[in-house]
Length: 394
Ligand SMILES: Cc1ncc(COP(=O)(O)O)c(C=O)c1O
Figure 1 (spheres, rainbow, N blue to C red):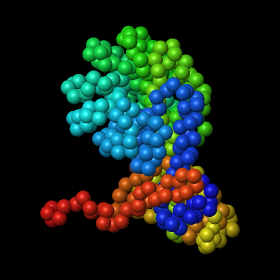
Figure 2 (cartoon, rainbow, N blue to C red):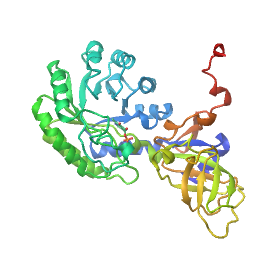
Figure 3 (spheres, rainbow, N blue to C red):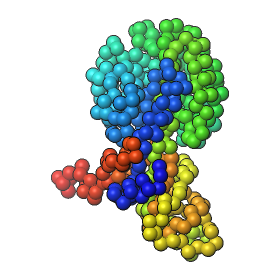
Figure 4 (cartoon, rainbow, N blue to C red):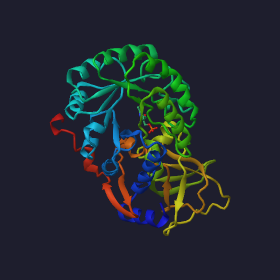
């Protein structure tokens, strides 16, 4: 997004503020579809559940992968029809199951045998089931994101998956198997490794029609075409259609977090820019050590840094936590009090993980369509913090 637009957004809506370019999201959708037109594309809502963003995905005919009642309701509110919903996750409870059943959700991914009796009791005949398999692979990613590792809580080991799939198939409701090997995946060969685990399962329960390979496409520079070519080959060998659940790939690069520098501290061994956003607004650097590119947006009258040594800065937030940081050792020439910073690649797992820690007010969210910025969610106000508290509790 260009500097003039970001300056305008900051002036009009203040900082911190998330900005999402909906046209960039649509381009990503088009790229996935061009690479594999036959795949069912289900957006992983957890990456960014903003209503305006979901509505634009609904308009494009994209479905949704949801794991909570809240995500389910958001998807429906955005206009995604029941048949394009996949309900996944390891903690499907009765409220989620009943509501998804009422909405006639098209697909359910069973993470274990636990919720199967609930689904069996409530789901209409139109709902079909995938069994999530834990492939026991090293997906070569951050430990927090390695959902396909044998030690992770996700899915069932192949033998247990087969046992559950046989029960579901006996009811005539099995669609196939589901693997989400991890997030921030980069290696197309992972598809082959997943295929080796899945092939005997598909051979053992005939009649499957779908293979859900999850999401997990890394940003930036994911080899999408190579990955999907292998995925298409696997689907063809198994004689099934593909389901894909990307989250980050569709939204991360389309979003920035705008934050303003409040103060500069350079007395100690490390120079610090204290910004008005931090871990409460963007948790990923604190949670995963994630590296988001940060750049100065124009200068808009900012007081320039006087540091002649060209030293790098840690970009820190306003809270009393050492982990309250947006980036370490960043070269930000010209940054000083009042500078506007753009934290890039923040359109996924950004606002979605924002919190009210330290009674921080969650930032505004702005969407841009055809170059036009629109407020999609207003900045929280102090009264939003206690809106749900009950005076009767003293
Ligand atoms: C089952 C499942 N599908 C899709 C996703 C989306 O992952 P990503 O945003 O990395 O594409 C996740 C992420 O945790 C997931 O657990």
